Length: 246
Image (cartoon, rainbow, N blue to C red):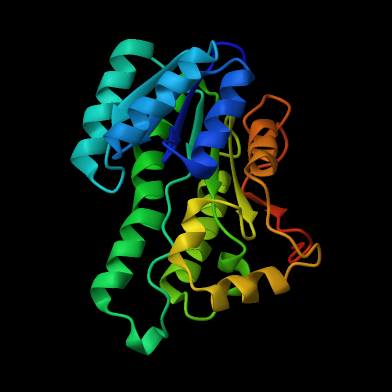
């Protein structure tokens, strides 16, 4: 992956930041898309201090105009995108479905699904010009099994899995591979958004009885981003400590 151009959304912190560090260590030029300008600047500076070529683009990946503006800058500077990791996501407010507002559902949908669609919609034509690319979408075990009091999150992550399968089939005869990763509970600040009750429920479901480490997610994304991932597309890669293996 030396000198390949990799865009990671939501890489100012958390899983996305871990993936950015790993792909940077693998030799990629790392581009961070995030609307957290302060966090994005710091994340890119940290990568640069590690000897990684890194850039930050202040981008709201739920907004078409913002995505197009940033992608125009990327195309102007690099003329290519080899790797796209759609990592942005929010859990939403925990609640029963019938007690969840339409506005809350829309908020989670925009972050978790619309952003993935927008980024794939814009980046895929760029990859087709070279007939090469790797797209990795970060879904969730909740998208496979559904977590109580997390209907917006579970349903949008399930949709990310469906989008991955559809796009993977559409591009199967090209040099572009599209896959997704379904982590269980990952040790990040995102856990602060869920109640202790919900967290205990999720961890109890994991046979390993522990949360997943960011580095473990980054490791599997690294392989999916490489040329070695040549015969897998439209696939779902489990990293849930044994909770789901399908």
